[in-house]
Length: 150
Image (cartoon, rainbow, N blue to C red):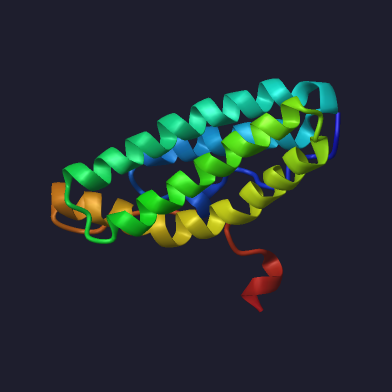
């Protein structure tokens, strides 16, 4: 067992679109499993992540395409680039390159919050506007630490 996960699920990651939030929570759980995996567990856990990401991105891509989400091309391209990286790293991991898999895991941890905050939140807003006529209401609890109140 390695260190604790550095990306944890919380209200700050909520987008306000239930199906998207569920997929994102699963991603956070799987990335935590990758972070805490020992070397022997990495191939199985990376495979689980790859299966998840294919489903995750296909779902979001379909939402964008079916609703004619205006900035969909950039978002879909980013998904494709992540999947390409995961596939390449899975191949290298099978050849014994554990370090590259650890680097990919860290890159995904670093990438996800920004991707969610910028690209996915815009998609969640779009989907809500299409369905309900306005932005989603997201209630976030305890996202400010006591030092941020001063």
